[in-house]
Image 1 (cartoon, rainbow, N blue to C red):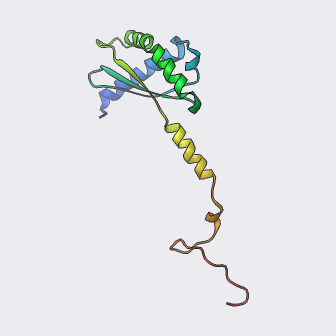
Image 2: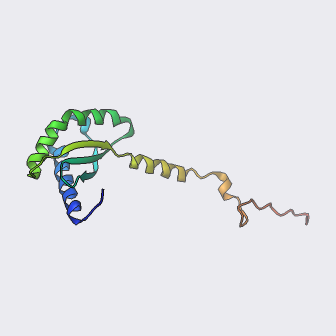
Length: 133
């Protein structure tokens, strides 16, 4: 969505209120150890997309728990925000941390061929023979 100063302020306010609700007011054990990574509120404030990060093996249980608690969370969010319209909640799993972890792991596993000296075209340089050839 296009961002301006007002929409950033609204997104930040919704993120703070939703984060407080998920942390203190919802007591589902499936929603422990999740992180609210971002919130996007539509211009007319009718839809709120929340991005949640959690462990890779918990995607299904967290999604199911959020769907179960969606009505209660929406009700609490509507009271906390005090807007004329209570936004419809849409929860999405944020997989960017998993992708970053995969990239970091790939960068740590350096293949041994990278330590071989190469010429400017990227071809390995043959070691010089001691016979003078």
